[in-house]
Image (cartoon, rainbow, N blue to C red; front, side, top):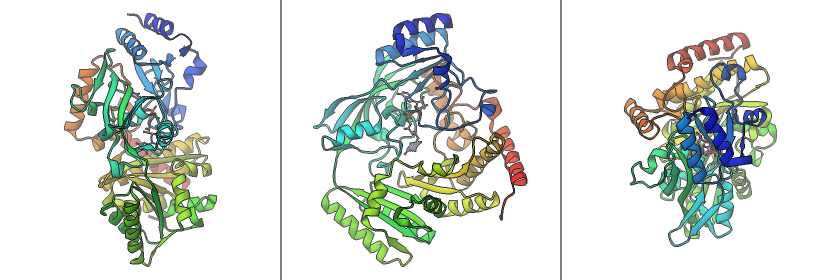
Amino acid sequence: MKKSEALRQIKKLCGERATEARFECALYSRDLAPVPALLVDPLFKTVPDLVVCPTGAEEVAEILRLAGAAGIPVTPRAGASTVYFDSVPARGGIVIDLNLIKGVLELDEEMMTVTVKAGTTWSELERYLNARGYAPKSVPSSAPASSIAGWLCMMGYGIGSLKYGSLLSQVKWAEVVLPDGEIRQVTPDTDPPLAWFAASEGTLGIITKLNIEIRRQTPMKHFLLHSRALSEIAGVLTAVKDAEITPYNLHFTDEACVRAMSRQGIAPGSVDSGCLLAVDYEGSEAELHRAEEMITALVTGKKAVSLLPGEVAEREWEERYKSLKLKRSGPSELGGEVFLPVSRLENYLSDIKRLAGRYGLEMCSYGHVATPERMIIMTMFFADETRVFEYIMDLSLVKKIQDVGQRHGGYPYGVGLWNTPYLGRIFKVSELEQLRARKKKLDPKGIMNPGKLYKWHPMLNPFNFSLGMNVLAGIRRFVRGGGRG
Ligand SMILES: Cc1cc2nc3c(=O)[nH]c(=O)nc-3n(C[C@H](O)[C@H](O)[C@H](O)COP(=O)(O)OP(=O)(O)OC[C@H]3O[C@@H](n4cnc5c(N)ncnc54)[C@H](O)[C@@H]3O)c2cc1C
């Protein structure tokens, strides 16, 4: 089938919910990351030819059948709260905007599950469940924007994961439209299994519905610990993580971040230095009582660690979905997100401090403990996207942050387009081969979100990328000056 004929039939199918208008299509050519056009436009076709907003699985299936027949690339997009161009087309084609596939379908109080449409946001689901005495087991800290399926298609770790595991472990089944247009219900035991779609970043099919486990909404207790000594707070973090009662949320903020918050007047408890550790528990009153005893005992034994007032800790919890609040010092923030072994936190931060000193910058780090072994740590610095050449030089420091992460056993959290040069760090050779075999099996025509996850663009091959970024970082240090280190 010709491309023009396929697009015509899709427009006929969806009517006003499809558009080829250049202005509207251009709105889909970016995500949250402000990457200069100078770097993007020569390599990628990010403006789609058509944007379409289906209302359910049947329409998605028909769109995929027509796109497949004409070999048109398809990029699924929901909240677009990602930063690696995950939901931005690399080769034009069709963007399927999933935001109309929204709403809760069924709450099963006996099975403690909820069936929800893919484009529902986590905050919408949370509000629905809270009103009935329930809650999601875990949520991303981008809950107001992130869709249910978008988080499954990414890494699926966030607030609550330490206690309840990854989102994948909480999903009972999902309805998926495969690239050939077949609608399937996948579970951990089907062929293909549910696990294939977790972290698949929109490259294996489109999820339209999910059935996920929920929990009863129980009381919470919040603690906010402060210390001028990183080693002390890192010790407390490990002790709390490994204790008999697992915290629902464990969030670390380093001293550079505290200073930046203090300058903005938004530091909790008006602290102006040191590091912070937020520890949040949920559970029965008895569990909360035991948790409180444990935290008090931990702090009592340590001179350098203090407990901020309860109302400050509660306010900090209320702010949990505002992790970009520091951006107001921007205009832009640049940073690297590293999936880091918790045991390496101190060494990682000490190398980041050295890196920041070398480039005369302030680098702020904060993150959640996601599993007993790993945390998602974001290290960011302020930049100015309106000064394009300086901004491009600053981009080279994102690689330097990832290099520090790698030295300590970490790797980038998520792939998309911009992290493809790190594929060799993220996956073992055998894992990457397995991923490519899945892709070949489910999407032999390669229409789903092409140009990402499995392979780098020739210009982004790891050798060129590494050389280019190191040279840029060297020029940046020479031109803009650095500091010690
Ligand atoms: C402030 C902030 C906090 C964040 N916190 C977290 C966090 O705690 N944990 C975390 O993991 N990430 C976090 N993120 C990153 C991001 O928000 C999440 O990964 C989010 O879950 C993505 O969902 P989305 O709906 O925005 O997906 P999008 O960005 O629209 O898409 C993400 C990927 O999934 C694909 N996709 C989307 N929907 C579907 C579907 N229905 N079927 C098939 N493919 C689909 C897209 O093609 C794309 O590849 C954060 C981001 C920000 C800005």
